[in-house]
Image 1 (cartoon, one colour):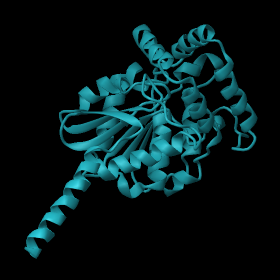
Image 2 (cartoon, rainbow, N blue to C red; image 1 turned 135 degrees about the horizontal axis):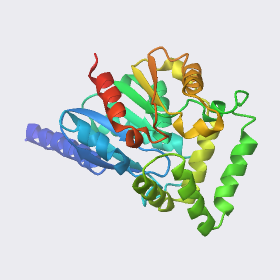
Image 3 (cartoon, rainbow, N blue to C red; image 1 turned 90 degrees about the horizontal axis):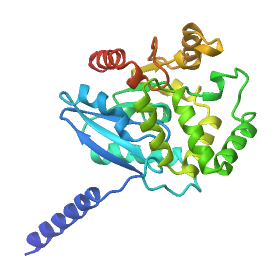
Image 4 (cartoon, one colour; image 1 turned 180 degrees about the vertical axis):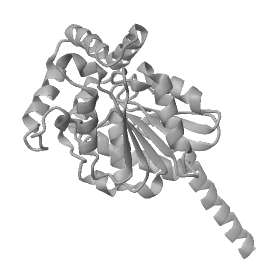
Amino acid sequence: MKKLAALLLILCIQNNIFSQNKEATYPFEVKIKGQGKPIILIPGLACNGEVWEETVRSLQNNYQCHIFTLAGFSNQEPINLDNGYLPIIEKDIQKYIQNELNDKPIVIGHSLGGFLAMSLASHHSDLLDKIVIVDSYPFMPAAYNSNATEENIVPQAKMMKEMVFSIPDSIYAKQQKITMGTMMNDSENIELATRWSLESSKETIAQAMYELMTTDLREEVTTIKIPTLVLGSWYGAKDYGVTKEMVKKNFENQFQNARFSNVQIADTAKHFIMWDEPNWFFEKVKTFITNE
């Protein structure tokens, strides 16, 4: 009887642990498609995971794609921002990997998602296989101001944050559509991304942008111990005198201490590289993730 009671106790504990994992909640929606080695795909600011739809179609025959839509974006429930946004999301991505995956994933992140990928890799390289960073810098302000620091950028970041809060919704909607037009080429994609943005929490957008502007990962990327592919764009800024060579040098400077990084710059894509230059993007990603 004692052995039976002990066995029942063990089964109860195991069932309880299993139930807790099954009911675990995270500050992001996850859709899973395909079979094989896991790939986590993290979209950028105010985007839905559907931004990866074409990418997933190109990968799902050989990989299990875990497609995130982050809290506060595209109709997802916002989180409490008292303790920040990006650190909370990063911590829960770490938990998701530890709780839900049986193999080290490849992480592909665009813009804000790329920032999360490199931050996660700098803190937890042991949990990941490889990362792909799509048009995201370790320190965004240094892309346009070589003298920027976490300290001296704060007034500008605060002003931006307050502007997002204070702007009337009608003007905000027009500005979002104009902004999206500078980030991608296709008119249908512009409409879609604009809709996602307007469905997102302005408070979450403002806080996430503030943290992106005031967090410098240039030293932290030195601790990344896994292969890293960096895909950048320049075409959206060509009318301002920016060249492909200038952007490539900027990326290489910011990632110069990341020992395992490889920087590639798209020819004609704007910020949403996977939409604007999909064949180039898929070829670079597939070559990288299949290369041992």
